[in-house]
Length: 399
Image 1 (tube, rainbow, N blue to C red):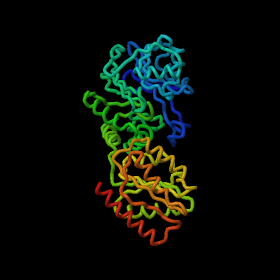
Image 2 (spheres, rainbow, N blue to C red):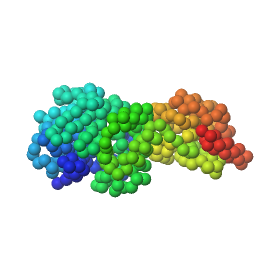
Image 3 (cartoon, rainbow, N blue to C red):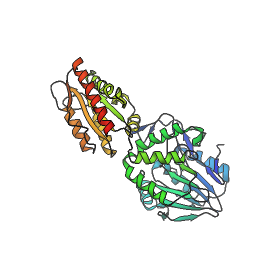
Image 4 (spheres, rainbow, N blue to C red):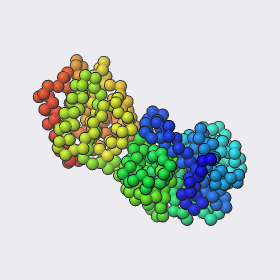
């Protein structure tokens, strides 16, 4: 029988591991080691469940719950977020505990109705509303657009724990469920990866919510998200990192993303990269079609410059680059500059198209250069691109 794990007095992790998950949110976020769907059980005078799990793992969650409370009833269930990886087990839960009282934000109630087509007589809650379960008082804090309109955090003052749902999540799938079992570097890196691929478009909301929580002066010594490990040791570093993520704080770093068939555009990319890299800039260079998108999104989060290159394919840029530019535009990137480049044969228009798409996506151009190469770069051409990379390195340092 699968067991619950106690994380605080009378508070238990009753979630599940999905070790086989390799694509989170469809193909938008490839992941390497699986993920978790975290549910939490508070055993007080009234028993409260915070979030459910993916429907296919419902029975696992129930085993963990029964390991703590046996056949006792559950009095309350809190839906912090209606996305199916947290809520698709809800209907089965209500079949098992039809008298449980559900709590959710107004936005979540509306989404739950549209997804599951049944009114469960939710109690609507907003920031500052509370639920007393006996000895403990739960306070609700709405967190809209981190990353859906309905996201909510639940804070238990006596135990100094914040159940943060998607905020502060990561994809670390392990039976060692606390951050200190994995080391600071891995935990922050995985939090960065999750933020870049899920939360990046909502940096303004994240920054505002971090300030609001700070102003509320909440005493927090544990953050229990809906995915990954639970934070208890590295909370100051996590909050500092999230502040940097939300404001797109950048270092002297450039990310180059390109597509190339006959290696002409690749040669350009590598010459530009060497010019920057040999002059004090951290350069990450990726062939778009050969690189997991989650890697690219994570690396560009703290870069100052993004360079995008493509050859000419029937008078159009490569499909992978067009898709990347579409994704980049949707992320509402701030505080960075960009520049296109690429090779061509008989139609010299792709670099201009890339630059136009970058500007349309809200990223200003680094400068007005048109880096377009006709067929194969000569040694002289590559030397020139190396010098351009060197000049760009200085521009990055001055940003």
